[in-house]
Amino acid sequence: MLRHALRWSAALAVVVGFVSVPAGTARADAAKSIAHYIMGVSHEFEDDAQAAFLEYQEAAVLAPSSFPVQMRFGIISSRLGYSAAAIKAFSAAIQIDPSDLQAHYFLALVYSSVKDYDRAAEQYEIILKTFTTLEPENIEFYVYLGELYYSQGKVDQGVAQFKKIIELQPKNTGALLQVGAFYVDNARRPEGIELLKRCIDVDPAQSDCL
Image (cartoon, rainbow, N blue to C red):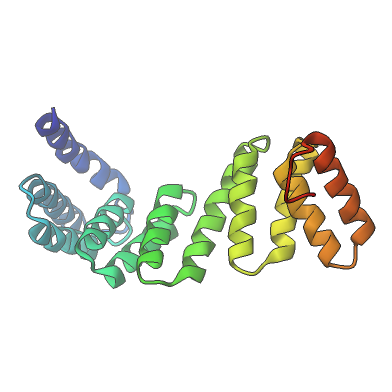
C-alpha cells in the first residue's frame, strides 16, 4: 500500500509541478524542477533523506514560486535538522499561499525547535484566528488562543478570548474564573467578584473560585 501511495505521489508531483510553476518561468526550468522533485520523492522512498534534500533544493532553485516544492523542501530540511533552510522554505510557501494553515503550522514547529517562541506564537496565532473565524462556536480554539496570549504576556488579549467563551457558554467555570480573577486583580473588583460568584453557583465545589 505504501509503495503504491509513493508512486502516486511521484505521479502527482508532475501534475502539481506544472500547475504550480508561474507563467514567467522557463518551461525547461519547470521540467527540470519536476524531475528533481520526483527524484526527491524517489530518494525519500529509499529512506535517503540527504539525497532527497539535495534534489528538493535543486527543484526549489529552479521553481521558487512552486508551493509543493517549497513545502517538500521545508519538510525534508526540518527532518534533517536544517532549521534555517526549513524556515526559508516554509516562509516562501506562505508567501505563495498565505491561506495554507499547514505551512504556518510547520513553520511554527521549526521556530519552536530553535527556541524562537515569539515567532512560533505568531504562526499559531494566525492558525487559531482562522479557526475561530471558521468555527465561531467552538470554544476550544478560544481557549488555545487565550492561553497563547497569556504565554506571550498579552494578558488583556487573553482575557478577551475567555470573555468570548462566557458569551457562548455563560456557565463555563474555567472562563468565569479566568476573567473574574483578572478583574479582581485589575481594579475591577466588583465585576470580578460577581463572575466568581457565578462560577460557584454553577459548581459549589470549585475550589479556585472559592
